[in-house]
Length: 102
Image (cartoon, rainbow, N blue to C red; front, side, top):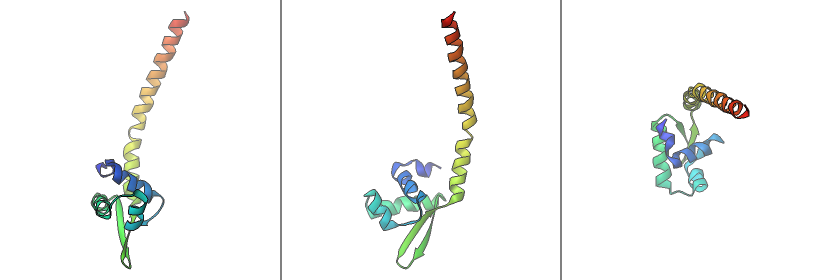
C-alpha cells in the first residue's frame, strides 16, 4: 500500500472515504492542479485503491473496499506487536515503581 504513503494521495483517499467524487471536486477540495490530481488518481487506480466510473463527461472515483480491507488487515497484524510491547513497558514501569517504593 505504498500508493497511499504519498501525502496528496493520502488526502485523496481521505476525501473519497466520504463517498465518490469527480476529479473536479477533488481538485477543488485539495487546491491542487487538475493534472496533478489526475496523475495521483491514475496511480491509485493502478494500485487497486480506487475505481473509476464515467458519468457523462465526468470521471467519478470511489474507494475499493477490498483494498481498504487489505490495508486494515495489514495494520491489524501489528496490533499484537504493539500490545506485547506496551505490556512489557507496563511491567517494567510497575517493577520500577515497586523498587522505588522499597
